[in-house]
Image (tube, rainbow, N blue to C red; front, top):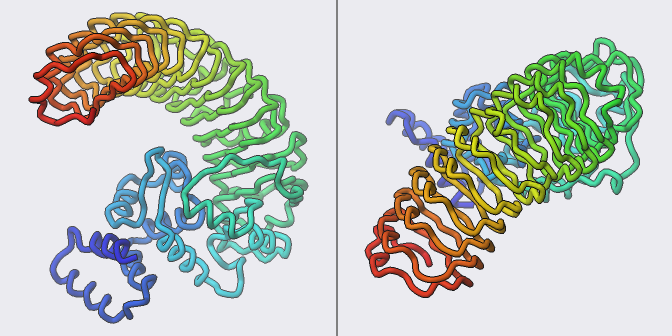
Length: 498
């Protein structure tokens, strides 16, 4: 606890004048040593209005959520998140998830509780399922409510999950009986911006309701769509994960009105064989189709998504091709096709000039890479782990921005000489592979920090020019047939962990 206080309070003193230092120290002295929350609140009180709202959003709702999605909730300026991070109030995990210390989470939630101690419907955020049900069923919600979560987990389960900042798989069929809500429950919630209603059925006429809703998380929504006039014109984020929706789901006719939609999450929609028509979603930036096991076709209208920067097709096991119209998705920076049966990455058609991440882990049907891969001059991360590739084209050496390359568990037996042209490469992985010999040109990779070749078919000696790898810190050669290291390795500037 002392470490947290030192970090948070210490961060508060960065970049402020001496007079502000003195005022802050006076405030701290007035607080008893045991009042940790009050001391932490000094840092919260120093935030401006927008920064406070973002802090409360994260504390009550967004712990464990991908920051790139959460930012769309308020069009979060990077500057505001930067302030929270510098104050040590918020952290970003390795997978871009928002994190917060338990004590800071509790502080934020207590601040919201104090908005109205007795009346739940007068608080800005209601995040526990039981309390949210109470507000809705008793019709006690007011215009003060900005966020409601019906998450079908007990308070203790939610606390445990959030304290560990983990996002668990959501098996809706094993949850409690579905909740049924009508338009009447939402009549007084005209300022609602965030609504999570897992495994919930809706019915009634929603004309004039939920007009300010920006984020709808409707995991496990039913196959039959019952509400009428469900016009969410300001919707920015739609999460239908683990639902029974198909391309013919009636709800799509209403969702088309959401012309501001930026994120569409269909993770685990196992009934979906073909995606819906995307023609109306010109502003869509992130499309998530992970674990749609039975997905066979992506609608050609994906070519209309001129703003799409992120496409996740992980574990769409039946998907073996991308539509020709995919050529038109020119803004894409991240493409994840891990675990699919896609036979060809469409780089051969000269597209994806802005792509920064291409992950094709365990794409068993991917047996070759087009020579056009050299056109991806902005590519930073390339994972071909587990693919049945036997060789890489020489054009791999044209990837001038590449910093991480994973060739582990492939059938590649040798690297092209052009590998030495990757002058920004920092991480090279070839574990459990068939590569027999390291090219001498690897010694030209002056920025290489990690070389992972454990359980590889390597044999013989390491090339003499490995001494040029001045940045090397990790060299993994265990369970290989390497018989010796050149003496020059002893003069490496950064002593590698071998």
